[in-house]
Image (cartoon, rainbow, N blue to C red; front, top):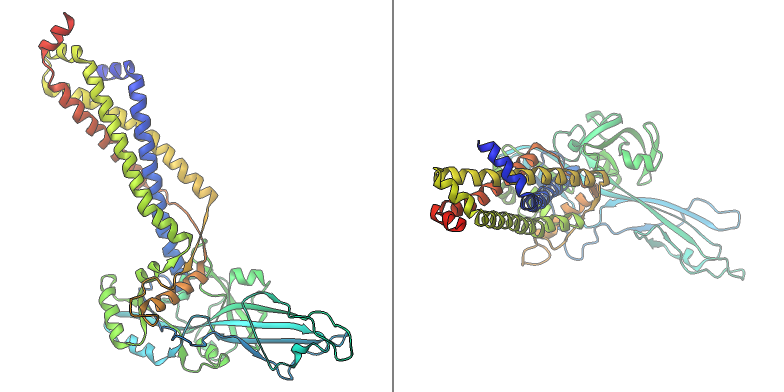
Length: 495
């Protein structure tokens, strides 16, 4: 009886049922999409940080760059050194230089031992972040720029100084210069459970091991190796020293690169860069994830001049479209979803109450022949619940289709470091600068992150739960209105 009556009433009120179902479907589809995008952005952010800090890294320790520091300054002093003269009498120049990455600062390697001695530290490793710059170019004969003892490099690919005036008369044409740069990280050999290497998998060759200490060997990022046509067994010049490629690695996530273009033994990096006993980063894994906050405090006491940042600190200093989408989803997307959902529920309630009001004769007659208030309420609630479930099913299909489309398009989110993020009011030497360093490294490792929205059973449960809730809310109001009807009203309506 209940199902027969339910089917007949829904078929007689198709317009009302369609409007309620469409409103519910749009609201649920939007909620599913916003929830999925929010999860995808969080996953992308975690992927970007893990590609640099490593899987499971809880704390990163850096040192704030002092104002006016020349860290990372590129200067090439050729003097009488050059690579010979061209057939037209021009001078060919080429030199590589390995120095600390711009914006980073180094500190004593002895800090690593202090960190390992802190209670709550499960594992820790140190790295030295460097940048290799190769300056090459040609100076025309008689060019006045050839008399300089040094030339400051830049991050641009090509630079063309003004034409020189030849000593033998006549203009010799412009000189052409170029700078090729790539990142190099000195790592503790064999350290793959914490730090940047823990977020990589081997593509070919092997990882660095303890037997490589002091040797000129290198492991390359697969994307960089492909762009430079380098393979295992080939050589690459780092700071005027030839390194043999022994392995090629890639990020454990297909949507980002690794933390650096090249990895060499830490002691070798310190020697080639003339930074003996220096490091730039320490990566720490806590014994318990719940003790990260207390571990941070303990590490700050042990290393008062360093900046200790948790993963949350680094994430808060990341900017670019990644943070823009995150903020948009968190603020606008969430509120928009709630407003649309509330509007859908309101529409369902109003249409249900309106439908009950138009059925005064029907419900009054049913109560006159013996229907109880509870049975009337159950009937109205059942009709609303079916409308809600239909809307939820349509909304789930639309929402899942939208997620599939986004994943097929696979939009990329940029990532960069915000120098002011998290900076205290004390000035540029505060904690914010150190966090920006860590975020800058994250930007190097995964500046373009593909957005992937996970499709899980939780999304279906959200759709079902919201549709049931909407149906129950509308049914509750409609049932309350129907239960207040009196049989006498039906008799007066008939008369």
